[in-house]
Length: 383
Image (cartoon, rainbow, N blue to C red; front, top):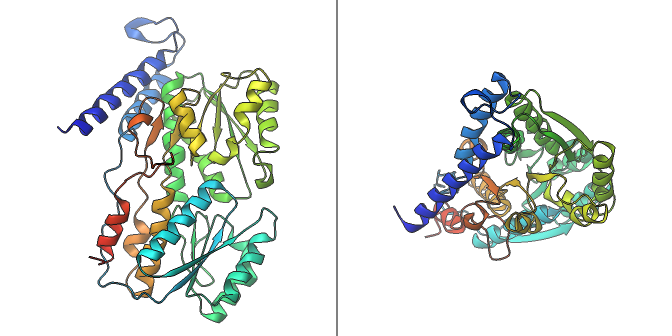
């Protein structure tokens, strides 16, 4: 066993023990170590959740996709990228830029504002460039009907990630960071909360319904938590994209003040926590709830190190960007997209116990698998 594997095994064992210990919640134990008041259904559910958690604490060992291209793609491509107004979305798009450059392609970022019509406007600007492809994420297809029809007329392929819509209107794929992927994030976090709560979790989950893929996370979290813990409760609190860092912090405070029984605050997007720690401190609510969710920011991962937040799923934003380019490379080569469509992104649960050995980049973002660039270049026949 290598030293790195040994550290990982020790950390996983430590966290698994902490999860089991956390399930006692400090309560008086009944016969055979049963926490007082816990039903057989709750105990059975949390034991299954503990198993899920133990597996999910492991660091990924690759990019998961392993089907190589038949030949190196042509280098004469221009990719237009709609840059969405979230930190992790921008990080993903920087991954698209880096991957495109690795293939000798040109890539241009076009910044999207937070207004309802901004994505459609910027999509038109992207099409005005007459690129070889357009990449966008998170925006429902219904908001881009005219623009997608125009792309079809111009014979410009469009690649969409992080949406719930099926392939349509000239879009070549919607499989990356799709509902199946996001439901996995929700299931893992729900299992973690169940394992830690001993039937006493009362969670508020903050999400943005304008991004349907985030609703998938919220629903999957609720389903996983309540399946493992029927006595646990979940309150869904909707936000607007314009609320980030502005109204959301007060919304969190108001939610906790209205219902003092809430002991978990779960966020379907790490950017939703911007300003929340400060608002909780100002309201005297710091430490009142355990905080977690999906798509963590640098600040969320730093908070795990500091012990002020509890759990996040690793979102491999950069790898998602490279997967976008991988999908386009297969399309331009005339190759099947099947392998790319069915392969999920690497992920894991990151907690305060294992964050010190989780694969982060030099800026503090989660990367999942540090050797991803070389792995993609090998698939792309770049030598």
